[in-house]
Length: 262
Image (cartoon, rainbow, N blue to C red; front, side, top):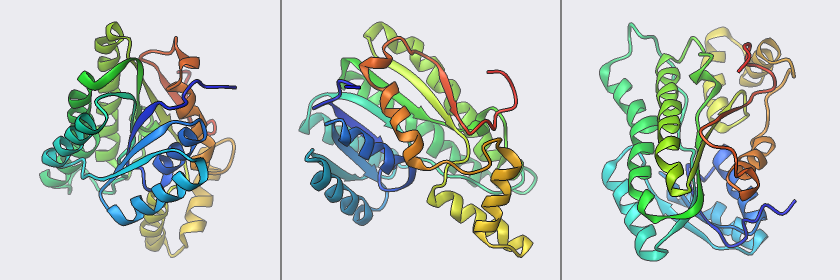
């Protein structure tokens, strides 16, 4: 299927690893040009050069801390002065948490609020004037926005807020012919999950792999984690003209984990 994305310009946050990197490669395979950003520049540039070589497209790597408003402003100004317009925005940057409500300080809540909500608000607000008609925005939220995990209440709460932001934004932007949707992944095997599994597994005296395998078998009918590549093509499809009637929706990619009719 031709997704009609050749030569489109795509901004992806958190593009150096995990889901963001897989999505970047999937867009590149369709001939789209990329603006990738991440906090750490070296691995981002390395990934960008590999994508350029493999897919023969342009990759612009920008060191951006989406938690920092000044850094976000610099990213938006770079896009404005370098390209003038954008076609697609994939809001992907984020990370899991581990805490209890009783013990987590205000600072921890604020950090994740800035990471999962305010980063999306600030970037979106800045690029709306740059978005081409027929463009799309896609927000990577989480199944935890609907069906929370007990050990990460801050992640659950801020991802739920991100999903609501995306829904509100979809109504505001569809008159401008810009579609907004959300994807709620389930268990996807990213570096962040390995870090979480290592921390939680140590408390039980088991390895990260043992923890991940047990969790997948417990939670998902499919019995395993998904790979970033398995869901990347769905991201790309939803941003393409082939999904032109998909507006303001949330899609679960979770191996059957969600236990309610959605």
